Length: 390
Image (tube, rainbow, N blue to C red; front, side):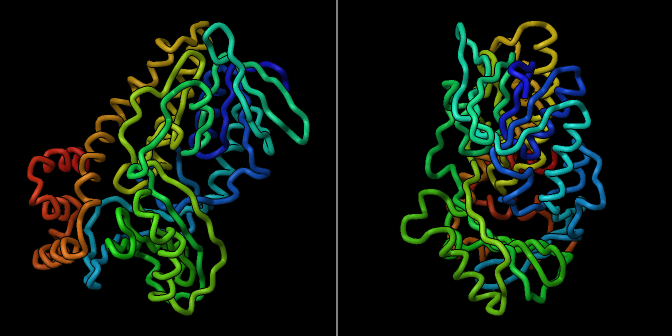
C-alpha cells in the first residue's frame, strides 16, 4: 500500500467493489480495503437478485448463477400457496464467486485491493475526513485520501466516526439467520416466502434453492421481536418442522437495515453506500442491486470531485441528489408500505392468500397481492403502485 490515494473504499462487498471500479475507471487512484481474509467470505446473504435490476449495474456471467428462478411462491400461515406471476427472471447467485469477480474487476480497472485490512479509525483535518487508520498483517498504517467511501455494511463504523447519524431503531433492523442446507427434495424453479407472525414476527422466512437438493433457508425478524426467541431459534424450529431430514452446511447471522431513507449520507471528504447508507429495500431487505446502483453513482461523483479538487459536502452531495432520483423516493414509499405490512397477523395473511386464490391465475401478481393486503390502508395504494409499477 502507498501512503496516499485519491479515494479509499472501506468494504469489499458488491457496493464497495463497484464504487472502487467505477472510481478507477474515471481516473482516480483507488484503494479498496476488506477486513476479511478473502473477498466474498463469509456469505451473509440470501443471494437472490432479479435479472432486470442486476443488468442495470453489470452484465451477468453464467458462472455467477447458481440457479435460475422462474417464479416466486407466497406461503400463508395455514399452508395455502400463491404462485406469483412476474415478468422478471430471478437468479440465486453464487455470492462467493460474484463478490470475488467484482473485486477482480475493480483491480483490473486500476484499484488496489487489500484484504485482512482492518480500518479502526478515520484521519481528520480542518473539518474534512482525510484518510484512514488501518491494521494490516499486524502493522498499523495511516493512509491519506481525498475521499473515503464507507461500504462497511449495516454496522458501519466509518459513518459513525465521521459524525453521520447511522443509528437504527430496533423496529427498523431485521435480525436475520440463514442456513445453507442440503438433503432436500425441492422444486428448484421457485423461491418460496413464508409469512407468519408466529414464525417470523415483523418479517418473513425464505427458501431459495441453489439446486434441487440444496437451498438457502433463512428468516428475518423485526429487532423489537427478538427478546423471547432469537432469529436462529425461530429458524431452527422452521427447518425442524418443514425439512426434518436436512443437513446444515453453513450457518450465518447478521442484521439488515429495513429503515427510513438515510437523509444524510455524505460529509466533507466522506460518502456512504449500500447497507452502510441504509439503502436496502425496506420491505424485502434486498440490498445487492440497490447498493450497486448507488455505488455506480458514488464512484463516479467521488472521482469527479477529486478532479475538481473539491471534496466538500456540497460537492459530494451530487451523489445523494442523483441517488434520491434513482432509489430514494421509491425507498420512502416502500418504507411506508413496510410499516403497514409488518403489523399483519397470521389471520390477515391467511385472508390475503384466500382472496388472491379466488382470482384467475393471471391476476396473481405482486400488485394485486398488495392491493388486497392494503384494502384497510387505501391511502397507501398509490405508494404501492409507484413502488411496483414505476
